Length: 139
Image (cartoon, rainbow, N blue to C red; front, side):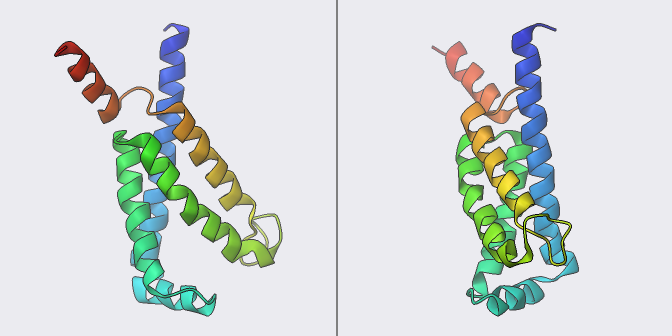
């Protein structure tokens, strides 16, 4: 495997890992906390409850898009506000995410990694890559 292939595969690994983690967080809101329960938590923070539904949707659909490598740059950037909101929600709990209630370290890290993913693009094994190859073959 040459250097370009290693880089493309590494970018894909990052993208797929981010996607799986996002899906897991969205499904946690749906099946464990429930959407009404998550809405209640959002309201306890002073946020509108409907944002819980939008957040779960973005995490699940955005995560699926990342796993597939579909519109990776756009999806990565679109998910950053979710993580900044999570960082804000956990800001009173200190830095370390293992603190009671979870600190703001993990959401900040995740937001930065999403920005990095947006800068890197899709990498290997991505719908975006297949579309680009098909377009260039038709030219």
